[in-house]
Image 1: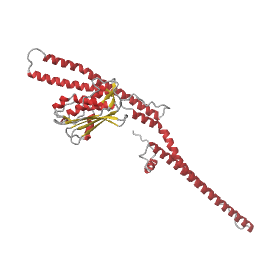
Image 2: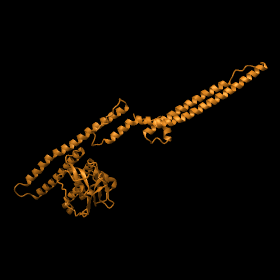
Image 3: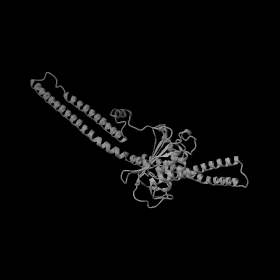
Image 4: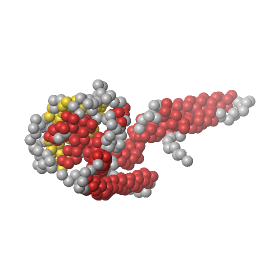
Length: 419
């Protein structure tokens, strides 16, 4: 059964007319408290007015002394009636003053009740705000954290304990998934190595090798290499998501980009691509895993080459933005077919490609940009994918900036770049 929490229907309608339904829970609780106070105060004033009017009417009805009394008795009775009339008027005036004073007091207390209701609602909702802030801090990389709400066992404590149990199950599920991917990728490399060795032994036997056998062996080797790259991508993705950095150092992001670009000169020439003038900022230094950041730069450049038109172009730029606490951006633009911006964001998800027409051959594992996204997130950066109006893609990786020369060099990186 679906349970609904909130003020009574009439009070909810009143708060809706006051425009408070779309406000915060604290505002709604304050409005409910003030409304209840005003209703109870108005009811109290109404009861007081009824009681006062009843007393006034009873004071006006004095017993009649009868008729046929002597003149002196009639004069005395007239005097008594006059006094009773004055007393009734005084009573009415006093009752009216009391009601007016009570109404003024009710108005003052209504204003006070707004502040009081606001403070009380804030006090009641404070544990919920703490839980909300703690839950927002917890991400897929920090599922080990818990709310750990203290205090007595009430509804808020039960809710916090339920969320902690859910986080525990999520943490166990994420760890099991990452462990499975890492173990499976590692174990599958052994049969791949055996298959590649057996293929080499078969081709190395004495005697001529039939042409069909050589062609089939070449195709099998290419497929084995593709599977090996796919398994390596799985390992990198699992390692990145697990946050295992053992080679953290200060690195020149521009050097990583130039190394990735020059290392693929043959692929660029084979496709007839033109490398436009690259703008590299020497002050663009970052801190992170050298292995993972190099893989990130390689994947971005590989993506620009693989999903490009023959005879197209590539542009690589690295710039530092802001002061020392700013960001460092790696921007790789490339030509290519026109892309739908609404679907470009899916490229950062595993095994997402915009169809075989993007590559022309339908090849690729679909993990390149997803690995870039995971590495960027692990280094507290952002990844932005934009479809160019003239066709192609613009990939921007922004990472936190650091200053100074590297204290430790990542394997395979040099401190001087050949421009």
